[in-house]
Image 1 (cartoon, rainbow, N blue to C red):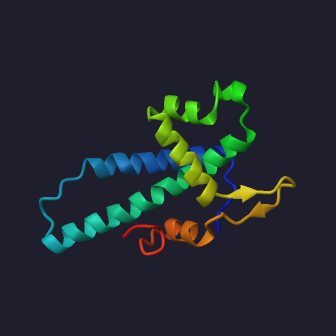
Image 2: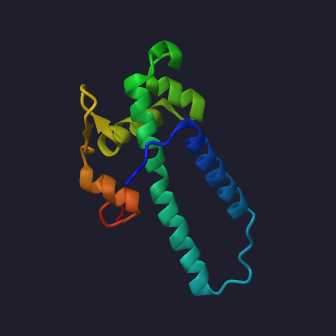
Length: 133
């Protein structure tokens, strides 16, 4: 179950997430055996598959609630500029968020993602259902 994080909670969790990623980047792997190294890669892959999930809801929220005046243009342009990615990549991420992220009706009712099974698998980092081969 996902919680509706308030501003302080979101910032605190992302601060811890970023600190953990920084600490992980400083690790050395000299003392690990081959099976342990393969296990590390497996864990990193799982983490990497979950990472896009974090952005889906944020992108959808921006798409639905952020006025173009605040974005400085279209959402694709804003993402491309802010994230230093191409506009094509920004549009791809917007489309992915539309299919896999949280949605709501005009009345505010929470709706399942368009690709609900794939979205759930991505949240679990299950490669068999999340589109990885």
